[in-house]
Image 1 (cartoon, rainbow, N blue to C red):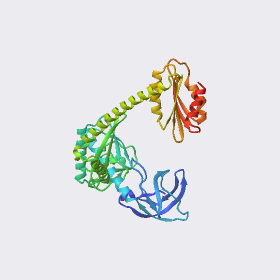
Image 2: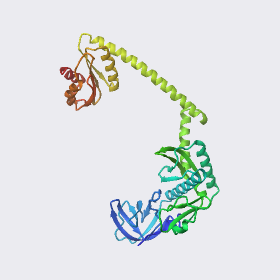
Image 3: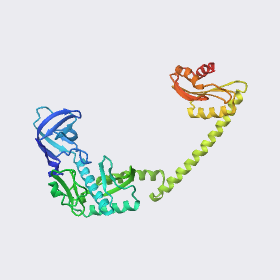
Image 4: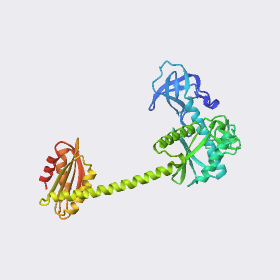
Length: 395
């Protein structure tokens, strides 16, 4: 028995009653098949509706094996014969706004600028269409967006009709039909004639507004991102909150925020560069001090507290550059771990990876590097001095 699809008869129908045909389960979960339904199943780029059946949450609606399956979080009682159904109205209206907005956008791009749409995706936050072009200029986007919103403002009627494929072919369709059986044609007079199974409002004015958010290259096409209807207000509110917070942090008029933030970032980068240079100078001084303490020894061994391994690496490189005949062991003790650098100068021929492999099991460690310079770390099963002495014994 074919389910009667109420969303085609009235896309604004959010409450309905129906008899249950089947309650079953598949790999997706528990599902219900109804005699009639206003729940829209996923298809044509538009997501499914959500809502409730007798208070049981409907999480997904899919058309499979000729059935419209309403997937519920919990299984309805097996004896259920009738359901009182309720659709998430906010979600349905949102999908209607986005889908209708997409029809208008695609129509303007195609008719006015010769750029056809090749695919459509209605996401939870934004909507995207793929356009058969490799570039969109700012000027073109501004023109299209303005024309699209003029269509919205002029409040064209949006109609849908079921007809044969032959009859539909008499209309100025945007693309050839992929089916030979009866087709549902969505018509915005003088704007768009398209075979479509989605839900749409009764007029373009209900789309409210359309805002382009940007585009990216997608293979040899472009992907345009946009929002329609209440999503425009949500995006505006989101950006307004961000701007308000930015003005609190950077007390400047909105039109000066970009310039001010750019100056702050540039200044911060310059400061970071200066700090890095000063830190490098300090490490060079520290390296010379360490070398002077071990002038008579062939092994330079130091244990530090809470030094990052990157600092150990920089310090180690500075030391071995000045000590071609010495071995180097640097250890950083941290709360729960030990980190280390093992290295030697250019006049020594020994693979420090072999030394590391022998001592890393002591701390369940990991590490590696070049034959003359190895770094790693592990758990703090012993003091840093003890670990350093164990490494020294192997040299």
